[in-house]
Length: 337
Image (cartoon, rainbow, N blue to C red):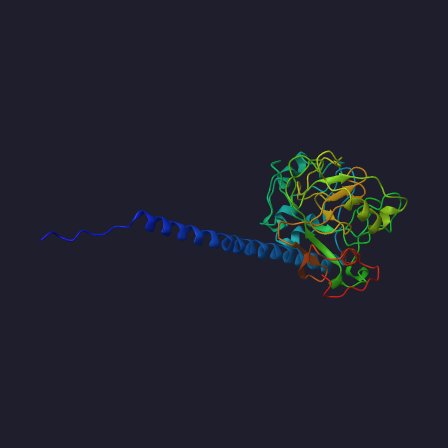
């Protein structure tokens, strides 16, 4: 008798199995990506919580908060620089030469070149894409300067303009403490995220969303730099698209971890989260620089009480503006963001 031959798979059966495997992979990949993003987002939240602890420990030591931007002449140290000893970065802090040489914080300055090239994981959101290859350490977390276009510097002697928590002390505006946050520390933003830009500066059209481009706009009117609404309306109508003028300042978003300029160290509550920025001059002056992130649907935000909450893109303008001020007396419902 002839032995029975073993039956193999037919071509159709093999193709069916391959198709089933392909469908399973297609179903699993989004779940895997979602799990990875959830882990990255959790790490981002933890980074902000650590910054919050450093902020509170700094305040306990000196009875005040650090400035958001140091003195002009490229002595532009940011808030995170002053908080380094409270982030377990004391050796890095001790290596900084703070001498007012007119360029101590200038990129490439030999006296501080080593610390400028340092990369601090605590200051980087793992969800963001790094497209800057300038050789320096970068940054994703920025301090809240307030809710008006002029809140970064208070130029033209408008010293009431900086109504947030961190801003420049270059024009003689003193830094503040928790005692000055009369709106409540749980209702006042301290730090949030900002996506890193591209090589160069903010005058580059950015294809990614949210964008790092800053549109050049005309000031909407007299005293419009002291209120969020006029600038918000003007900027909202000026999305960065090919052919529209963009504002430059020589710095790309997040290019220098130690720098206090709006591109690297501060943001404001004018444009809503994950929208574009605007400026009516050089970006080192007056403008709208919103928080942004690669997280879907919003940004992580550290509040002055040390809590971290996820602020949705859909937050109302009135609520977002109110979260940016420290003493404007707004009443904010806990379910409005």
